[in-house]
Length: 439
Image 1 (cartoon, rainbow, N blue to C red):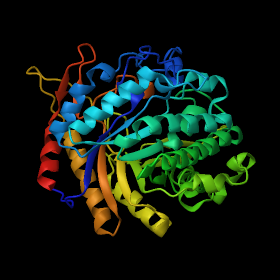
Image 2 (cartoon, helix red, strand yellow; image 1 turned 90 degrees about the vertical axis):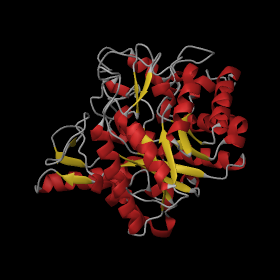
Image 3 (cartoon, helix red, strand yellow; image 1 turned 135 degrees about the vertical axis):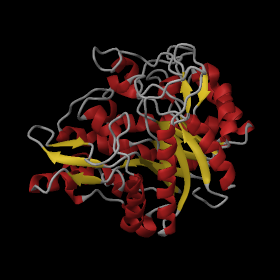
């Protein structure tokens, strides 16, 4: 069993759109994902998140599961369109009341809420006004941050502004695989990248003004390997590394864009922007799942990302490569030095073809092995001198997995989407025992 110091934080992560459901209840209006789900062919199983895990109504049951698991912290996101349903900026009392109840219930169980303001579900009204291509969206986000902080700050242990800027930038605005489903040329998409970072910076200012004691940046990381020794593949792997691993980290931690990415964003940068973006943070969240193999291709997007050869694969066809997590953590430590806040692994997990057996149990030994190996990888980084203070599993529940709909299961808890019955998997029990032993 991998050992950690007693104060090490154990947690799970979820997002509002993937679990809440109740998409048209109590004043909530559509987000870009509600719109995207209704496009023909956009979602693998043609599903929607209208019900999802019905967490909006079943949150007490889910929090009881968290308490049984023995976690210290629960990282959730708030739904912007549930809290501010239209462009008037007026808050929706029913939406805020829900998060009041949710956070109170989390704290009543002795669990610290970690609140992320944005996990890809931009209100459709904001998208209609230009979305993240429009600099005005940055101001709207700051207003939203102020409303949430004013209501919830007294119960939040840690805050985060925006989850995984890289994925939302690329999948939502370049490849079109995610909402809002745009396929912008890179020179136009640079506005999205810069405005996401600027929004995070302004939200940090707002949260500080409301007394936030701890604020975390969150990005996803994946070491990039060239698919071959060909010069073109090596060059594209290097460029992809800049896009994923530095474009959204350098500005926040050292106050400048990587030189290789400057042509993408410079036209949208105004005086003072980088000072806002690089506002000091207290923690740095690392979302890690796999490593990537990158090869050069012809086309407007000059590279393709595939699973590397020689690794076992998850149901997502992602390589199981725990050494990549150690590499990611140690690379951040080396690259940013004293500029790097203490780290937490804010997401780590895997998807397999989980199902209930005839006795109603869900045995997922591959997930147990995955979690065990990645905890060992975290321990290796700590032993190498990296300050890692916590580990959050993605995810507590099987849920609506974006463009994959309900075809992929990441949860420690199996969800029957017809009945909403929750069944803890073998991995849930394994992690519960591991957490208890670590204390």
